[in-house]
Length: 533
Image (tube, rainbow, N blue to C red):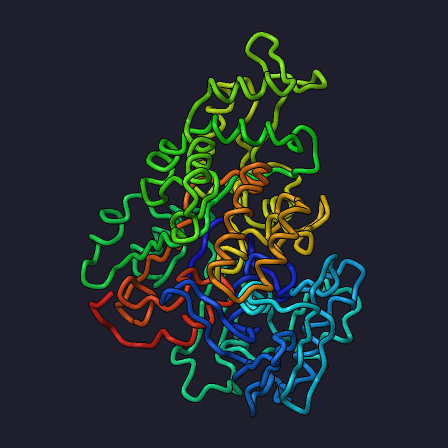
């Protein structure tokens, strides 16, 4: 496997540290989820370490039954105590680095988490929550209590000798240029994984990754490939394939909404109208990433956007209209000194949008975006970073404006709105927002109330009505600026292996760093050549 923009690999296997360049692969390879909620198959939930679950009669207590006979890679048994520890470990450090489900964040709906026997876990909520499994539990991974309870600083722990329950826990080789994840000898699923190892190789750019793919040295990449039909598929039509799924959340322009003037709604709305999304899609993304409206949900959840007024407003805010953008700014107290935009305090508006230099599509897209913004008087430029470790720590905390994908549950659009609007998802300014996807450090009280009503309802018609109200709040506040679909890039060869996600075999997100879906791929791909995508 090959990525793009990778820094030199180091012996660091902390799944809680988003700045580690292979950190997302280890979630799935080494550490496993309880359940997996996917958008594939029209929306589906796979049991995983949680073998089964039931709700109490009042719909407030979720009773999990953990898979029996699961062992950690060091041979010790995985029990309900490990699961309870993993769910509650956020109290272990002041920054709540290990709090995946929001137990220790404001406005939590979790009342208690208790072990029930060797394989039972009871999660009791304050109110019923129809979205809890998909929106909260979906991103939770399980770590061994006997290892992590002794870690005094989880945010900086390197975890050089990882112990997990996943299919590939044995680090058999680690150089600055590749990491080999060997099979877990104690893996609990009989006969899996079928492949001997995952070899994740370094590539500094999309072009470097493509060269490795074209040569046949690499089987799978999750990068953008320009003109994929001619540059890759045509090189070996029988075995080279691409699956660019567009049932996906948008890539958005992100600001820290607590910082002036990004904190002004009119500014964010004007920026949205000043960007030519069609050009970005066609020229920056080669047409593989369709432009979105200002909600960004029309490709992944079209049946949830039904209000004609909402549709019209979402379209208007995403329609390229620099003159309307300028008028909104001047109506909101911005002024011009010649062609230069000044904020209401009289300061010139300028910023750099940061991106990894090897991400050729995002670099091209941002060149278009910044030119669009320059046309309305904003001194916007592109600042390239050499690799993931140089870019991600600042990007994940939006210490500088950037493009980012949406880290949210795919069970329903609730996860998207929860990540960006709910007080329980709020990450303070300046802090890494990987755990919730609240990159912009924003929440809205009215949306929080509506989302709380949404999750307590088990009636689809009520949920849809509430979704319309949440969408109205979204457009009124525009916490992030959706631009184009974030395609689920997967370019792969079936010359030696098959079982990859494809349009005909769509079982989860095909990107091998997307947790928890990636564990489905890691346990589904098998040796053997085939010409079938």
